Length: 410
Figure 1 (tube, one colour):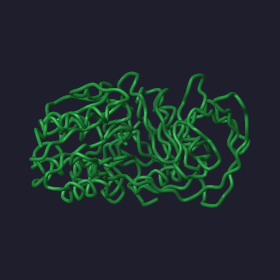
Figure 2 (cartoon, one colour):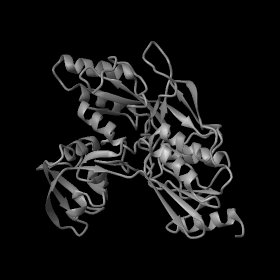
Figure 3 (tube, one colour):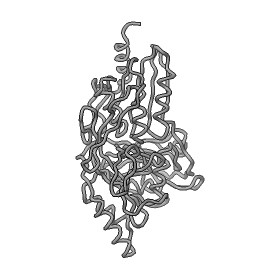
Figure 4 (cartoon, one colour):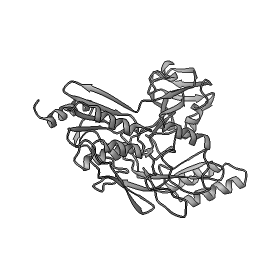
């Protein structure tokens, strides 16, 4: 892992990634202080979404060997004192104990719902996820009732999918180790490993049957942006996550769309990602101006769209409870500035700004330091975004109808 000044809380540069972790993976920000902060546009807003496992931020949060989603229930996040976290880690290391474990205990007691401590390997895997690549078996898991680990989603065509593992299955053991009650980051760490290495999973199916699946880890990847042309001159831009390059792909899709197209921006199930990518994506539909504000320990900062975006063609944004962090940042900007009609259900509600600090044993603590707000000043953490038009299972159908109304008669 690249060197970082010891115990220096700093925003990550764009190479390393600015993450809105709603997994905030995700709210990214920057400042300058005591030589520990870098340039203001190279910041990180964490989103719980993207990550190698991340925190165990509460029941209903989801994570896996690729990414995460959640239900947004529960109280808003508190904050953990970084000095106390670093001190606990240093004392544990001096006593020959785990600095990561000691730091995580402090974070857990602080009420920092999104705070998490990674060991160096977990942190490096987290970084790799931001490129849209990871090594694993292709499944996402979440904490279910009774601290059980439930399969939330599987990567199409991945090892888990080929073995018949399906959403709703309960993961009992990984290589003989019980996983019920383990933090999500530990479960993910057990799923991870070098490509080609074997891993054995013991699961309880939705029918109650118990079985064992012998898998081999693979290098997996996901396509963050897909574009589909539908009848009625509709260009659907589906953004699965804001990994590196996704913002420019959105802009390219907008530029390449037919001159008479209407846009349906599908952000459903998007767990967040890099804030810089989210701002670039918003810039595709805005001609400059404010995208969001955020604060880092009481100091307000702002994120602005680049000028020159498409502001003439109609736009509808599709959202749901899995729309998190960076995806909420985009949604809030388009909604507040009157650029898009939003359709679907209330979004997750993660607007916590988190930044990393390296601990004495090489672990990295991601701690909440502030919140971000939409252009109209709305704080979304714990609240989410209420769409302009509520829609359930037939949300896409309704969105297409709304888009037709915005376009007027053919």
